[in-house]
Image (cartoon, rainbow, N blue to C red; front, side, top):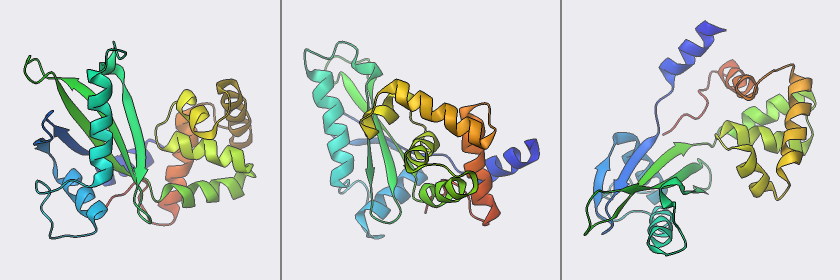
Length: 200
């Protein structure tokens, strides 16, 4: 099992990381973020600094708006997530970062990750362990790193219901932790020679 995890870690690349100033200027951009942005633009020739995709800008603007409002006392703990892209979906997670400067109080950290392969792996896990449709949705939420509370909000159910589904999933899969359930997805993907959460 440990060898499988080490092999998977060697194949998996990290998320795309993008940091924006309050003016919308790109302060930092790694190569993965550049690839995801080109993918979301569907144009390999468009420069990232010229235009960010509208969905990326909406997440950044939402973080900035909430941070500047009087209601958001703890905006540093705020996270906004969305999924973009038709075929090869990209999970975009936005966070507020204090800048330490009075004239520019906030920066925005955006993490971009591919999630398009999750559904096929969860479908195989669903078949193998005879999971219900709702349990499959819970497994997909786990695979994208969502908390029980986030899964509950996304599926419009209560958090105790998510916990009950997780107990059922763990019983059916004979797993004792959430991580082990996600490990089944990773194993399911590697059985096909694909890498889970692999990007472009």
